[in-house]
Image 1 (cartoon, each protein chain N blue to C red):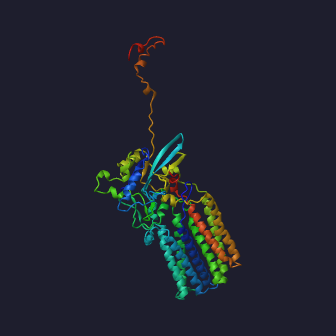
Image 2 (image 1 turned 60 degrees about the vertical axis):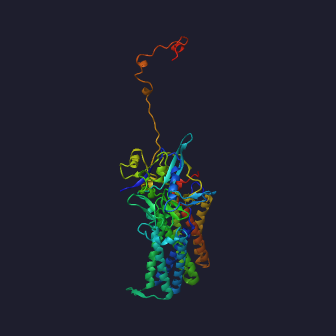
Image 3 (image 1 turned 120 degrees about the vertical axis):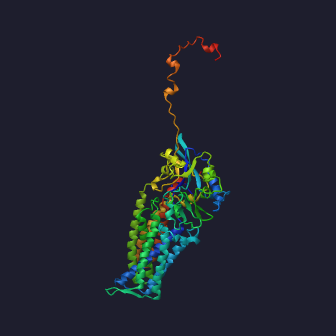
Length: 331
Length: 243
């Protein structure tokens, strides 16, 4: 519902699920491959192919879920293929390419492990055997980071949505995706390789802490932002007191539906501490306890995912679109 | 290089919405399909428009004035909505600078509306594609029309000629002259979008009248001295003559 006044963008649930699901998927892949890399250098016991393989399938499941969610955002989903064409200029187009590319690599990674087809690619002078799953893993890791950058830049590149126009947006998308992925990896390991759960939970704890710091920094930054556009620059009249008397219509328009979330200030005040608690503070506590009581890792992931949904809602709702200056008074 | 644009004179706009309705009428009747309206006669009507007229009150009563403010796509010279489009549906024409949406390529992802600070784009809820002012591109080049009609529909409709149309890159065009001579300005210059459409400010006409214009310096009464005024009780010319 449209409520005139100082309101901000209406978050789309399709995009909330897209960004949180693929973030967790990318994070989970990074967690699995980090473990495999450690194991390759003998720092951790190498796990069975099934562990990495089924983990890879779980990654794929999350990414597919995000991809399906993204289609609900489109007015004309049957033309979605066209969105891969403008990669020269559009970060959205780049994401559309990076996501399936990463999915393909994740599928290949899972497939190589599950079928046990792991042809040797090269043997390093140190005697280290590099097989195809490692090579694919490295490529997929790079693509996971590319995808984080694309997703973050979709928002960070919009210069007049100043709450988003900061490197913190990209950093936080990466950290929050990583945090949820590593937490999920800890949960996954607790069920299929209990000895390794501590490794994942430890990293999840560290990345969640970093994500907390990053998100807190962006909240602090945004709290101090002063709007560049004002009603004066919007209509080009230099006078300190200007009030809109009519937006030109009374029945609402796309502009009043898309850019006003219609939630009360009390709701906004509640959701901010709620997501800080659910996405960061509680999961950190549960992860720390989960090091001793693995059963708590399930709650850690569920709580953190719900927290990240709330975080993403707030992320969109906090963006103050200059167009709202033109839509302040029904009349 | 040509950059077609509108120049809107806020000094003469009376806020009659004739440009809104004529725009809607022309653009809902074209080959691109209707501009969808939902519940047009119902309790909660809403629809797609290319052009809106808004009203602002400047200052505080009693020292206030009303400003009517037509708003449509500004056809920015550096349009932020174009590079973000993932499909290439949004584009800026090289030959005349009009920013257009290819309705056959648009996937309705709405990303361009996030990237437009002016709120100039509205999705068509029926066709699920993004729509915006086309500067009546299907009209201004239509050779079957008399030349006088080859102007955007809103320009033709304006009863006070508040809307001018032309090439702002041609220094001799009516729009360039208006911008140059009447203080044309762009909206939200802080974002560097360089809108092609310009607005002419409200201009108050002040007349300066000097004292010697009210009282003629060469008034014969002044030159020859004032005639002696008759006393209150004495008879004057008014008593004896009809003039």
